[in-house]
Amino acid sequence: MTARVLAVARSEMTILRRNRWLFLATLIMVLFALALTFAGSAPTGSLGADRLLVSVASMTTLSVYLAPLLALMMSFDAIAGDSERGTLALLLSYPAGRGEILLGKYLAQLAALSFALAVGFGIAGAAAGLTGGTSPESLAALLRLIGTSILLGGVFLAFGHFLSALAGSPAAAAGAAAALWLVFVVLYDLGLLGAVVLDSGGVFTTTFFPWVMVANPADAFRLWNVAASDGVALTTGMTGVAGSLPTWAAPLSIVLWLGITFGLAWAAFRRLEP
Amino acid sequence: MTHEVLKIDGLTKLRSGRPVLRDVSLSVAAGERVALLGHNGAGKSTMIKIALGLLSPDGGSVRVAGSVPGSGAARLATAFLPEAVSFHGALTGREQLSLFARLAGTGTGPVAGLLERVGLADAADRRIRTYSKGMRQRLGLAQVMLGKPAVALLDEPTSGLDPISRQDLYTIIDELAAQGTAVLIASHALTEVEARTDRIAILRQGELVANDTLRNLSRRAGLPTRLRIVVRGGLADQMAAETGGTRVNGASVDVECAPDTKMEALRRFASMPDRVEDIEMTPPGLEDLYRHYAQEGKQ
Image 1 (cartoon, chains in turn purple, cyan):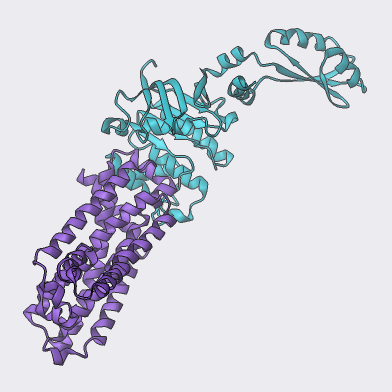
Image 2 (image 1 turned 90 degrees about the vertical axis):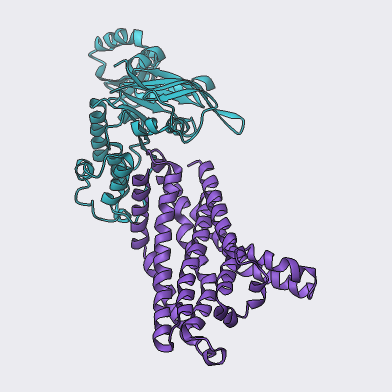
C-alpha cells in the first residue's frame, strides 16, 4: 500500500519539478512575501509591535489569496490530465487502488506547496527579523502562519482534485478552479460585507456574522492567525470578529473542510469512468 | 491449451438503457492470440473496460485468471494497452516505466531490459514530450510486458505504427503468447491480424457474430474466390458474355466462383490456351470475411 502511494507521489513530484511548478510557486511566494514585509513596515512604531509581527500580519492577508491559488493551480490537472491522455485507465489497471493514486498525488503536491510556503514566508520572516527585531510571540506567529497556510493549501489541493475528477477535461477543471477561488476568496467576503452594511448592526451582524465568516476556510485561516496573536489582530484590525468566537472555531472549520474536500475528491474520483 | 484465463460468459452492458453488449461469450486460453474485430462503437472498448474492472457489467460474468475484474488478483494478472496512449510529457520513458514497475510490484529491475526490447534504449532518458506516436506506443507495449501477465488486453495496438514497428509489435505479441499469456487484440486493422492470430471474434453492434479460426470462418461464409482472366486479342467482351463475368478493362474479365465450383472453373479456363493468357486468383481475405460477418444482419 505505502510503496504504491510513494511510487505515485515520487512520479508526481518529478512532474512538479519538471514543469517548474515547484520553482514558480516558491519564487512567487518569496517575491510577494518580501515585498509585503518591506512595504508594510511603516506602522511599526505606532503600534508597538516588532517588524516581524507586522510582516506576519501582512503575509497572512497575502496567504489568504496565494495559498488557495497556488494549490488549485497545482492540482486542477492531476486527474483530468491523466484522463485526457488515456493514462488514467492504464494507471487504474494496475494493482494501485484509486485511493492510493489520489493520496500519492495529494502528498506530492502538498509537499511542493509546503516547500514554497515555508521558503517564501521563512525568507521574508528572516529578513523582517534581522532588520527589525523579533520576539518569542512574533516567531510563534510566523510558525503558525506557515503551518496554517499549509493546512489552507491542503484544503484547496483537495478541492482541486475534486474539480479535476468532476470536470472531465483539464480546460474545464481550470475554469472551475478559477471560479472556486473567486467565490471563496473574493466574492464570499464581498457578500458578507454587503450583508453587514444592509443589516447595519442588527441581529445578523452581532450573532450570525462571525459564524458565517468562519465557515469559509479562507476566512477561518485568517481568524485563526488573528485570534492566536494580539499583535497580529491589532495590525490587521480584525480583533472584533476574532474576539466574538471561541478559539476552537477557526481550527475546527479548517479541519472539517480538509475532511469534506478530501471526501468530495475521493467520491468524485471513485465515480469517474476513465 | 484448454486453460481459459479470460472467460466471458453472457456479458451484457447497457448504456442509458440501450445495450452496447448483448449476451457476449468469449474465452481466451493461456498462450492463445485472439483478434477482436468490429467497427467503431461495436463494443470492443467497452468489453475491454469491463475485463479491466473499470466498468461493471449489467449481466453475465467475467473472470480474469479466476478472479473478478478489478480485484487485486485480477489486476495483478492483467496487462493493458490503451488505444492511442500518451503519457505525461514531463517524464522520461524510464521514469514512466519505473512508475508502472513499482505499481506492478516487480521493482525497477526489468525496466532497462524492456526499454531495450522495444527499441527505446537510446530514448530512455529523454522526455516523453519529444517521442513520436510510434515511440509512445512502444513504451505502452513495454509496460504490457512487465511482470509476465496472464492476460494482455491490447486496444488498437497498431494504430499510428509504421509497417516495421507493426512487425515488431507482432513479434512481441508472439513472445507474450509463447510465455503463456492469453492475448486479446481489439482492432479494425484487418489485414495484419490475419496470419498472426489463432482465432478471430467479430462484434457487431454489441453482439458476437463470429468466433472461430480464420479457415473455419471462410468455409462457413462460403465467400466467392475471384478469378481475374487476362484475355488475348481483345476478346474480353465476348468472354464476359460467355462466362457471366464482368469486364474490368480491354483485356481482363473478373469471374466470381463459389468454393465448390472453383476447381471446375479453373480447369475450364486452363483449357482455353488460345484465348486465356493468364489467371489471377484472389481467395476471400479477412476484409471480405469481416464485411460478410459484420453486415450479415443488415441485408
